[in-house]
Image 1 (tube, rainbow, N blue to C red):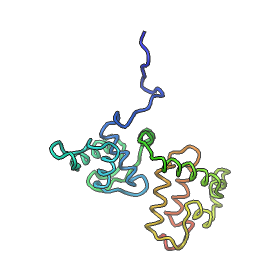
Image 2 (image 1 turned 120 degrees about the vertical axis):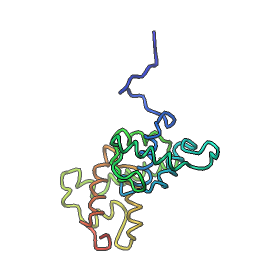
Image 3 (image 1 turned 90 degrees about the vertical axis):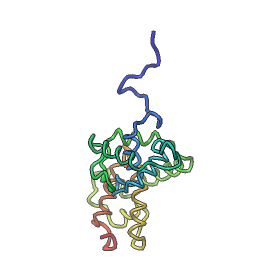
Image 4 (image 1 turned 135 degrees about the vertical axis):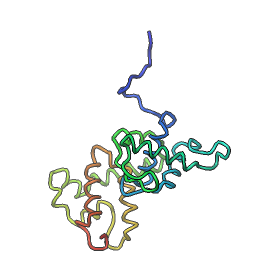
Length: 199
């Protein structure tokens, strides 16, 4: 009698070592920011090496990342529909749910897990989330949208984007807070609720 077998679609999760190179670069693109805006191939290569050290390194010089290997895997991911955009430098990404789920298999530091736990609780308690959850997303005010991401008129555009990306990377696929995060981020980026300093 055979035991401990997993079939496709079972609850077993992949470890990082089980991920294909193409899956790793999709996760790397997500972490480098392409899910929110864009990411350079070199940034994706660095993130890919962090996820799975030496998987993309030169054989003779293992401390060096082979950027061509990363670029080829980005091209593969694009052909399979996991990424949308150019394989050459900027990858405008649309990540499938399974790719987002695979991102979570990578280990998070204790500090990151603690931050996510505290931050999620804060986001769930915000006025913006309460309005979104009750079907009143259109009534979210400028102050509420800014408070959701802890920004204001004195925060620079680059700092705003950094704050948005961190929260998006952590919670965009969360079934409780994800929809609110994506909606409020789109309001901020579209300049629909904040002043001209975001345009």
